[in-house]
Length: 402
Ligand code: AMP
Ligand code: MG
Image (tube, rainbow, N blue to C red; front, top):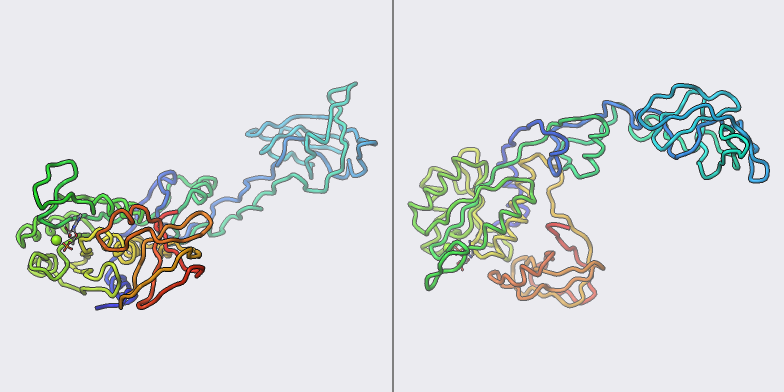
């Protein structure tokens, strides 16, 4: 039986990266950057006004005040999106708006609120306050300078990254390919939700859950028909999934019973069983198989075991396969408001509920078939073997989505 970290390292060592593709920036959310991207432009692109107001020379109004306003002659107007047609000469100003290009000769902008048009002449602007040189001006390149690396290989792109890449004028960028993940649920007892139940059968629930988790890991799912527990059927299903997908994820049939056929099917197909069993609870009977360059993650059938092993072992592998630097689950500190107990001899990943103040409680019964607590949970807390954590203890809460 492997420790979790060892299992992860063994998996990482077997991953073969999938390459890259060019994708429009607007379609790149959550994609992983294939190589460093340097800014092709300065941001801002040019000196511009940060306010609606008047571009002027700061020295012209250095002595302006409420009681002794300074008068400037208004000589033009620059709407955002137009090039300045004239320059600011001493004693003059030009109307500007947020984002207007700064006219030549100007070295500051006064806010509209600190001015008024003289009653005798609308082309005479009264300034009621001084401005410092370069006040209310966005300087070219103050945000990003040409050549600066703005996203690095392995970064996962969020909405802010997309805004920056778009502002730099990048239409398409190179991102890592998404793995296609075949989802195969095994078990003669399983029935498609919505169909007729026979005595002793149950509705299949792992593929919908795993499909969502695959999506959250940035990969694509292909969902296969249910597979009864025969070696022939299991083998056929796996051959099809290996033929069509980059990664195969099975659920069920990974344990020690005579109907647990995933390990055997890998071997009769000519693949290798890389390891079996990881020292965690839930999720001990996890299987790693390989056929050629491709991996099979054989998750236990119990839904909570499938959930936990996916998050701890498959999610990081899918992210790493896409070239991601950061493959750990997001986590934060929380405070227990009740004790948590692990009497077993394996590390236990307990389902918890954490509120918006970071208070953590058990999500309910922790057995690995219990779906009500899984559905209530929004975090996992790891408890070492033979451990009781008292109320008030600070714990690390693992999340799958914020
Ligand atoms: P197994 O790992 O095949 O021994 O299955 C362990 C338990 O999980 C059994 O009670 C199965 O009926 C149940 N199970 C297996 N696969 C699924 C599934 N896809 N959906 C719901 N329950 C499942
Ligand atoms: Mg089974």
